[in-house]
Length: 108
Length: 117
Image 1 (tube, rainbow over the protein chains, first blue to last red):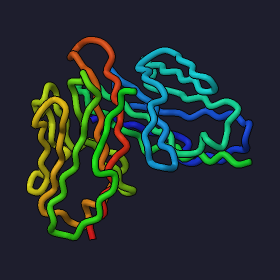
Image 2: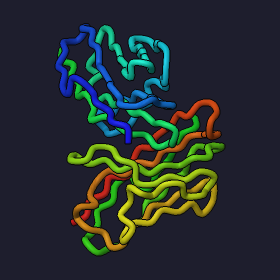
Image 3: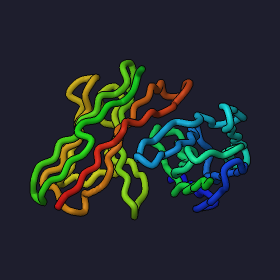
Image 4: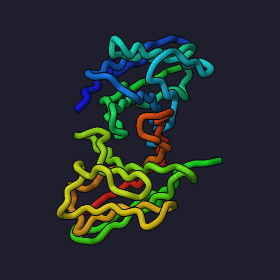
């Protein structure tokens, strides 16, 4: 099956800082999603981005499908951004394979 | 506000008991997934359905787990008998997929946190 690697595993930022999270995958994909798992355990959809670039407020994402990676950018981080960020991909089958996540802590 | 709902949100039970978790997918979605999250294994797929038919249950321990979709608005995941190693958060997700075409996004419910003593 497809392998998904995320980096860094852990990240501590001061409020207001910017960050880049990376997701590498081992095969071509039809689906790539970024999720934020908040401290209450909910998985929040951030982006559906099998290719290209999207922006939503302070967050943006880019997927370069030919090179098998995706990046999630967080600008002007806030304490509410804390949690775990997951990248998940699917090939021809619909099932998502998740990476191990990046745990982000934003401090005052 | 369309969302996936799951019940119960929390369940504590004793080893050997039957556990049933329920999921209501987003209206109009034709694909329903069950995932499990543990500290050791992370998020992993247990089973999924399209148009109520099971497509893949290879991630599910067959001897004790069963998944069904009695109708388009209800998916169930049962564990019988439950064991302490089944303690985890179980997520249901739904999406709309026409194979070979279009968007393939999945939306997750809030999860059922299961503790088996």
